[in-house]
Image (cartoon, rainbow, N blue to C red; front, side, top):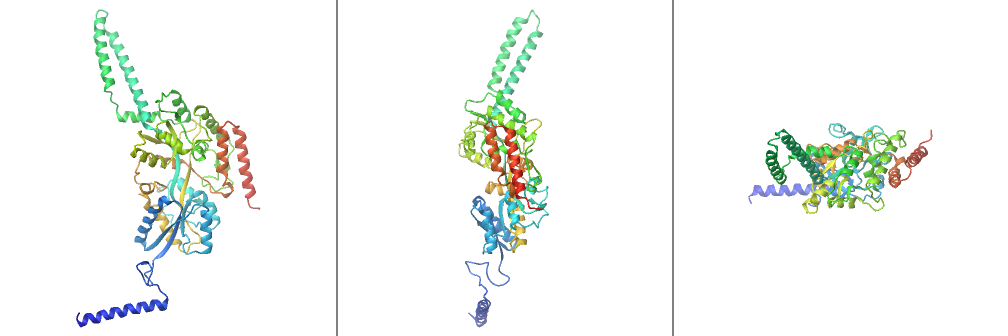
Length: 491
């Protein structure tokens, strides 16, 4: 090493020594291999924490955090927490100002009212992209409280109708074959009547022989136009419950089928669409205690239709479970059912594993009748910014990024369906769930009605078992009204 290089080496050592000494005097952490983000002033990254409870999104959140950090030089640390008393954990951590207190967190929209009153949900700052061009109105209403957006819509769950497409295609093909046979028979009759009496006998024998051979050949090699089959299948799909009952009455089901329609009648999530358009609790955004209408003639008529179904599709509400119904659908024992978004991944996996040998489809829930509409229930998981956070700007930026731009691969990697509209769906059947989500009603956010769902589930069970509908609905309405008036502040 020459003299010039030795002087340079000594100079570098002295500079490093001086920096270490300065760090000790000023109590500045020197960057280490274990903690490369800490170090000299200007090198330390700003850090925010996001809490969540669903381990299914762990890898996705981590990748989003890395991507966001590369863009903004802000370190995002996801923290998986127990779902038990989740909001209480957030509140306690915020008040104690713990090291990993969440700057933002993921939860279902029905808890927003409680979070907002506790100061744990701040008004959204980045609202430019929260429009109906990017999100369904349902998603925005799920995040709205007192007229303000207080969270970012992330992903949703709702219900739609599931059907065995293989069975219905076979049904359609049978109908087409019957129509062809009738048309051929009519044509044969026309040809026979046009012959003269003198040549009728010999001519008819020849034509009959030719026609029979052609019919047999057509039967053996009958070909169906896929577009025609698809169009006819769409005509068969019931638009109302009355049409579904009519189909069930006339359908010659395969031997393996045990139920034309079966669903989990014990769970309000799969029943709610019967009354969703007419039982109003909290208005469009689910937070208005003055906008409640439970007892009305339309809701009662819908429940009467629901009760009637037990006469056609006997289902034991005490023993039925969603998992059992889906397994029966996989086994080909059920033609129609009610299912949530996760059914697509479930059935696709079963098909790959060789446990599901049918094709299937998803359709919007039918109307209750020609006059009465059906409307599903939906839950929107949202990202809320903690009102106690000292990093609200960064938290809002990450929330916007996570729930908007970074959702394109959400379903593929987590099985969650993004609330934001997607450029293209990995499975076109997801688009039906999005359509159902657009028309759905979100769970209300009012603390005063937090037990409404439990009571409504009990009501449905009693209706299914034949109890008086008018009395049940009247009693529920009175009870909810009593709760709201009791909890109302004194003037």
